[in-house]
Image (cartoon, rainbow, N blue to C red; front, side, top):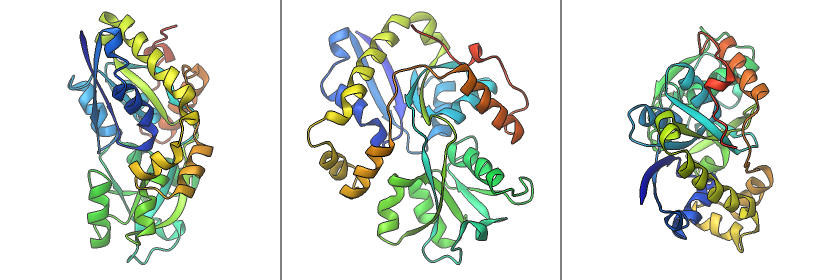
Amino acid sequence: MKNFTIGGVPEHFNLPWYFTLRDKKYTKEGINLRWKDFYGGTGEMCAALRNKEIDMAVILTEGIIRDIIKGNECKIVQVYIQSPLIWGIHVASNSNYHSVEDLKGSAAAISRYGSGSHLMAYVHAEQKNWNLENDLKFEVINDLKGALENLPNGNGDYFMWEKFTTKPFVDNNTLRLVGECPTPWPCFVIAVRNDILENEEESIKAILKIINETSVAFKKTPLLETLISERYDQKLEDVKQWLSLTEWSQNQISEKKIDEIQETLLNLKLILNTIPSEKIVHNLI
């Protein structure tokens, strides 16, 4: 039995992984795959990959590309979610901010530097033609729980997180949604450490084959909407909307898209240089 650990956020996107683990599908291939939740998101997973605490991750595309350029020795093996991530822009319900325009020059609460909440704050600011040096400030709050605790107390002014994950806290009046910012690219990819790819490529192929077979059939799961609603504390109408907007993928990210993302990061001064796409992706087919 070969042992591997994969990291991911504990959100509805990753329910297909739960199905495969529940049904012991990897065990049948001689693989012991363990899942580790990362509440701190992409920045926390990048650190775990670097420290060899995990072997692979389901991770935000822009975050892992930036970290690979900065020296993280891993590669993208495929896209996991093809559709954009819809980042909700949230403020505390007791705040005086009522529109995105009000937030110019205020402090973005982020899980950590290098995280999606950090990088997307830059993307959003550029879309709004804000001055990236003067109009962006940051307050590190670690995760969604940290945002819920800190924003009402004035530690950070707004928080960008996946819209549907934070919806229950909008519904209960802890947060107020003031805007949205979809990613201009496929949102989640699967990344694997280079040493694992070099030594265990066949096992990684087997893992991807299983998750891809499951994700292809995922939307046909009986009573899926009810299951997601109950498991993730989501209203049924929100689950239906989220499923209609979300597209799983079984394919590699294109070189063109890699180049587009790198150019965006470069223009935002989030990286100092670009690198060839073959240093970012590893094709297993």
